[in-house]
Image (cartoon, rainbow, N blue to C red; front, side):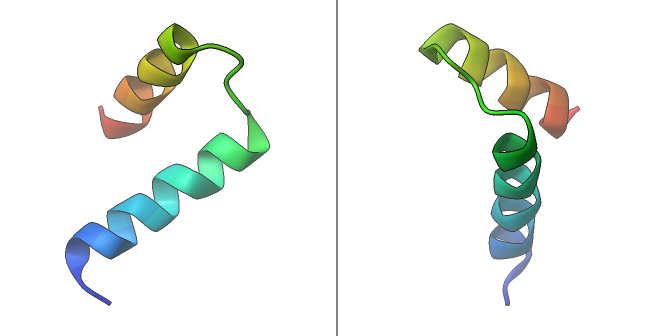
Length: 35
């Protein structure tokens, strides 16, 4: 698995546990995960 695939896997795992309800919320959650 490439590094970017590993990153996306981890991001999806977190989002499945705490799903976003709006696009804004999704962006915020992705930013939190990235940081």
